[in-house]
Image 1 (cartoon, helix red, strand yellow):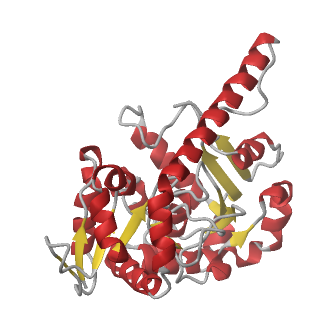
Image 2 (cartoon, helix red, strand yellow; image 1 turned 135 degrees about the horizontal axis):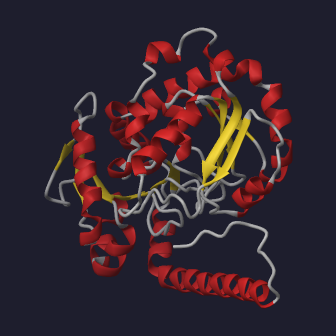
Length: 343
């Protein structure tokens, strides 16, 4: 396949750099890049909204072979493609799930640290683990807010809020290495790791947990998993309304946790690790190309200004409600019952 990469916002140029670096690691090297969109078989669009606003004629001309690579929590579904926060009711002819493709520059450096793979897969390792399950993360969704309010009253459960103390995406984060090391160590000491949805339908922690060889408990009612892995073989899916039963669910499957963790690691290596992820994305895009409906793609592209207006209205109303609710609590000197994620 010949691949062309459309330009990005200058602030997002790291996406293109990572894409080229990522392609160099692919095994085998069966795809090439071209500087000519006319001769390309596939056009990657790593910054869809920028392309839509600044090079719309390009999309009109090459729509039939344009595919988004989108890791945003709230993606703009302007064109078909791979979306990390894909949700189940997205149109099956337009959307596939994927991992967080452009976050290598924010990768937790301790994911590759000890223990070695041989130790990870040793028999009986899970019996030595300290925690039944764990979660350390921000209060970025209602299911997380509810999770962080639960009182599990168990020494072998770690559920801790990092809002206000750690921001993975901030260049100014203090004690980054120490916090990241502690985060990885807690997951490694867990039989299961909770992966509740964040701002989007998914969270990067799912793929970190899989890489660490720990069985994930996925808490997201709408997330659309990437195709390929046998998710049911290693992940437990828990409805957002059932988080009160997490202890019972985890204990019911505790004898399977080591095997599920091993299979999670295998799935990560096969589908999401550097040598295989790039080629796998191309395979999924080739599959998606067979199901696209050209008329639908054109209608959505031409009508997207209405969608953007609707999204902007929704965000304004959402922010107005947030500010109003917090104002009422302040006026009456009441403590808001949930942690609030701030920019």
